[in-house]
Length: 570
Image (tube, rainbow, N blue to C red; front, side, top):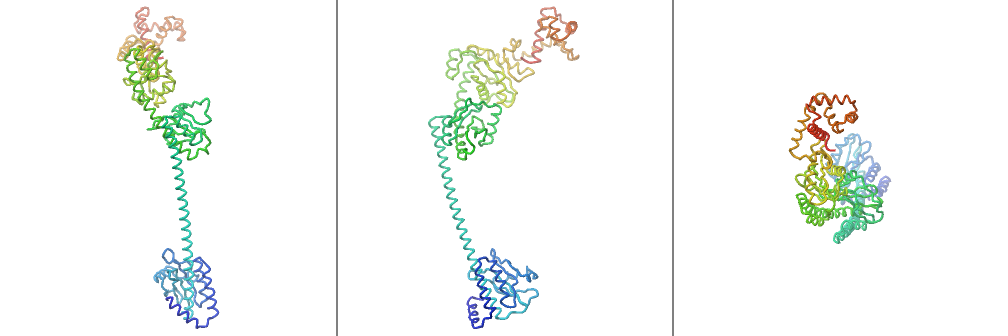
């Protein structure tokens, strides 16, 4: 029914005398407009159906997401097939129309429609078809319900628009705040970069970077080399004396931090590592309470770490140039150079060749003697306080060191650097002028070769500790040495091996004790008669006359070489 037809019907109703029930319906239907909840309006409308006449409300539908959805049903409607009723309501497509309900003579679906659109459907039934008057008042109720729903929908949409507007304003405000925060962060970051740039332009180096970081954060800042030695400090609280870390643990800490790629907190310090191309060159840290090392301090630390990495990489480049010059000097020193030229060139490189020097030769099984290993050897030597000139030659790293090097400490430092102990170090004898360096180099090679051929092939050997090996030539003559030992001690060695005796050891100790029976027996912890028996067996098995001076000399040399071959250099 159109609104015009409804108006005509309403004017006709004015000619009718209203029953008290009808007046009550009109009054109560106005209460539908008191609610702003669509579900509540529909429930109240269904409750008012009984006031119209003999009918009752079976179900109520509301538009949800563009489709009619059942929201209310009376107890009596539960007996009806719900799916069939829902399907019939959808078929009406927002029109008034009849519906079939089991056990009911009459059923009708009233469209709850307003000019703004369809808001729902009200299904009513009766045992007998209602009168025209009753149907009129049902239509009035449906129109009142539709108008109330329209108002509720409009109110809901207004609330939604207001909520959407509030959300939009909140998002706009949040966007402005984020923009302001980003602007502030960019300004702060630009300030950091400007401060670090000024330090770089002025050539302040590591001290300038530490001072800039302290100025930016207000926290004490420090820079250490890869061994934990201080390079720069800015701000209060510098330790005195400066603590020396455990080398192995400190190196592991720096490697782990570099792999993680972000600063870590260690004993009150916020630590970052400068490691360009993955190589640890140094560390930068802030000292202060954890609460003060905020995100901005962390940002400053990261930028300062980049500046430090560039600075240290630049220093490394300069060091590499100097290293090449040093290599050229070392090469000339090893092959022979006049003293005057050697002193002048070394002085230009900051090294004093005056005073005693030693040549050190290094070979590592799992490291090629390339530039990186030369630098590793040079760093390890420098960490031990050794002043040296490095180079590489014939597959080895060569150092010309000022003073006698600490052999064991150097080997331990290189083992940590290389990650393995499979290396050997040879140290030549003392030389007091550049002209003696070639001789010390030959002696270092001899010591290295003896160490590598000994049973304990890894470690450090000093030429001065070689004893008899100092007069033996290196190279293929080792085979001749072994043949010499076999020639004089072969039968005794075979007898010892077959019978698990120690005749060669007895003979060696006999010579060590100068041929004195009492001292030899005491050294071997045997009786003199036992010693005489053993020496007699030695004469019989070897066929050697121990009273012959030349024989005794050859046997003594052979036993000394046998002992070195078995135990290695001291």
